[in-house]
Length: 463
Image (cartoon, rainbow, N blue to C red; front, side, top):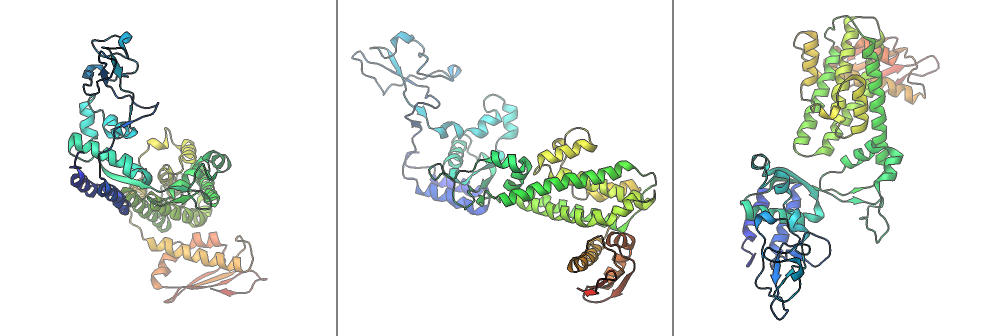
């Protein structure tokens, strides 16, 4: 780059490139603006890609570095330290009127900067290359923006006058538990295998997926425990749901407000996760899925548990259908994050591999529910919201009274907005069964509140 003629063109490419996160672009811009000389393509070290060049040796034994001997294209690749150039024999190496091989190797960037071209089949598979270059996304670390990313940009600009890929996703660093950068000199390097052995590979992957693009992440055992708990819960709740589904139901399912509302909420969560993933925000996508999953386990599964064990009715068939659809879509959604437990669960009820199954589509849950019912089904999210709130009030009263969550409730009076009265009433049987409620009353009020009366030994509590 004599005179650095590419500076402005490369700065323009840096702006054309889409960055995740956007603020990382300034690191490349600062590097380009700070360049004040050409970059050497060679290194003086033993290992590396040999520079495929020889030089003639004069009659006096000196090397004529001004007249390089180049191989033909069909002779590449060539190691000049192990092969003689055309027209010479090995016995002439280092001798007067003979030759010597270039002693240097190519700088690492000279070959790594061709990653998109090599992977795309440049020069060997024109059809493949036309489909793949420029590529879509380069994920990489922030510390090699000025090297790997920069060099790849340079090579694509010189060869094709284009970007090598349209977008780049920059990761943060993994820090030690004290949030210091790991290094051998400090002796604070945390290797993954002990963590995998203690918490499982899914837990480690879950922890890594919570590291947002461009944000440093500490090796945190408490976060590993969260991932392990999630993986175990996914296996357990899937086992329960699939056992109930396997028990079978012959009655044609009928539309159930709570089931439809739960599936609508799942569609909403998958839609939000899909949007986050499209924006390469995999951590937020995981957060959305987890939030829905824990509500599914703690609330919906408990609400329909009695109905799923009940008589063979359209209501039971509806619950089993919703459990099956929810389980399948959640397993598919969690597969990129928890690959091992999801593969195991998938084998319990589906053929093939979950990682070959499609990412769940927004609206898929309700579409499958509607298809099984034979008619279009709409749903109100307020049913799930209101019933979940009501069950939470009953549980809180029992917890505050230091009673088991299985303790019966003599009477529960729920003061709720008018829209919630119907929402709770359509799921009354499920709420009564899940909360162990003997008498449930609904009263219209502008602000939600609840009065829950437990057994004889418990006082009435108001929340």
